[in-house]
Amino acid sequence: IGCGHRMLKIYTCLFQVDMKSTRHGGETVAEVLKAHGVRFLFTLPGGHISPILVACEKLGIRVVDTRHEATAVFAADAVARLSGTVGVAVTTAGPGVTNTVTAMKNAQMAESPVLLIGGSAARLQKGRGALQDIDQLSLFKPLCKFCASVNSVREIAPVLRKAIAIAQCDTPGPVFVEFPLDILYPYHLVEREVFKNFTSKSLLGKIVNWYLRSYIGNLFAGAWEMQDLSPLPVNLPKASKGQVQQCVELISRAKKPVIILGSQVTLPPTPVKILRDTLEELGIPCFLGGMARGMLGKNSPLHIRQNRRDALKEADVVILAGTVCDFRLSFGGILSKRSKIIAVNRNREQLLKNAYVLWKPTVAIQGDAACFLVSLCQALKGYSCPQDWVTGLKEVDRIKEKANREKAEKPTEQHLNPLKLLHHLDNLLPEDSLLIADGGDFVASAAYIVKPRGPLTWLDPGAFGTLGVGGGFALGAKLCRPDSEVWIIYGDGSLGFSIMEFDTFVRHKTPVIALVGNDACWSQISREQVPMLGSNVACGLDYIDYHVVAKGLGGKGFLLNRENEDQTEELIRTAQSECRQGHPVLLNVLIGKTDFREGSIAV
Image (cartoon, rainbow, N blue to C red; front, side, top):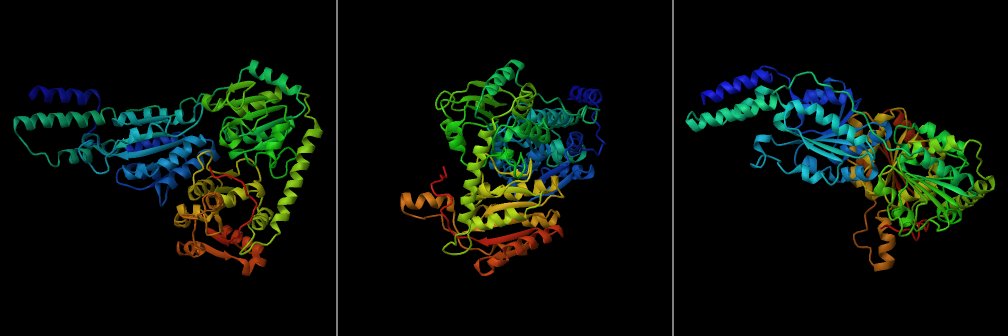
């Protein structure tokens, strides 16, 4: 025992265990986040993570607490998409971490670089029945690009730097880092907790005492030595010159080319303004999806919004720029066998999704889609897309939109025509508005009618189709764009997932406007279920006074129905005025049924 005691003293000197320091691991976490440009941290507090929250606040990182852990991750996701950097959420151990699973899976499928920091039981107590102790890493390994548990204070910086870099490299995605309780608190508190129930002076007790001293020494050895906190390099795949030249030859001969842009084109390093200029210079008609909505502004002659299926039947060259041949493109079946297909994607699996089954790529490039388009444009100097092709597609667009406006004027059996409501909204949205899509039927209708005003002004969940993103997305968006008018377009079903976040909007002074299409139904499901199976079971809701709930949480709420339909635009303007004065607002609009999306599928 004496020998062991002397060895511990030597160990303590060699690795500089400062037993008197009041510093704690949460401070190192905050320093790393600050060095990486993190401005916001989203959380729901818990004792496992308190040192991180307090340290971040002291360093000027804004700590925003939400009413559900999933909201915290959704908010971090929105920040990642809009800022081009990693978004950060911090949750307590056990249920705090497990509550984020859906949001993390959504981030994975949406390719968002989100860092989730989770608390956990102390390392010494793992597997011994500690509060909220579960195997968190196994849960997140299928969802994340990188998972790690920090084993000592000196590991905090290198593990976090690695996690943040991996989140942004190649195909972006979520990462998870777990912090045991004893990594985050100061030495004297950890020591007190470890020894509070230990009093034995027997030989065995002395051996245990030596072990525990060694354990704590290892936790804090070299804890406060200077370390590099700066960001690691982020690697991105790019198209080769040969691949670009191959595509130049295809495009230069094309008579009817089309570009389909997916969310990946909005990722760094190419600024969205440069990409927009590139697309306008190419002059090729574009269909926009996901985060790419709004890329060409409100009324671009190149943006084709309608009849995509018919256009793709005619196209002789199709560029899939960050777009995947999944259910959104009928698994590739929507593409013509006669078309030359240029597919560009950072992720090889997504690049070749369903390839050689229902479609075949002519050129498949694993690389950044936006960088590819910029290189393609530079190599196509002097190219001009045939104007009759562009104007023909735009004329079909105009005819379809005219028909939609005519449908909007038809009265519904009860309540308001949702299409007319959405046209009113589109007419009154300012140029700096940002739209959050959270819902099924009503939101899908809005995607056809409401026009995003510019690049990075539309947020939807992505390929996972997750309901409940609205509160978190709006929170993150408003913090990133405080001067923008942020609208959440909600279905009444999806609103139920995050209406409590009106409390968060009020407390954190993040005024947003929620427009709820209230038809007392899960309509996207009911539309198929009733005619196919003859029952509306589990699809019915009630016309709830959601506006009253918003008022009860400290916001403003308004009801719009057939009785005050003539005040629709006035109420929208009132909501905008209240929002400018700092109040979050909910417009509860009772809507009726239309045949606008008849035949659309929910699965």
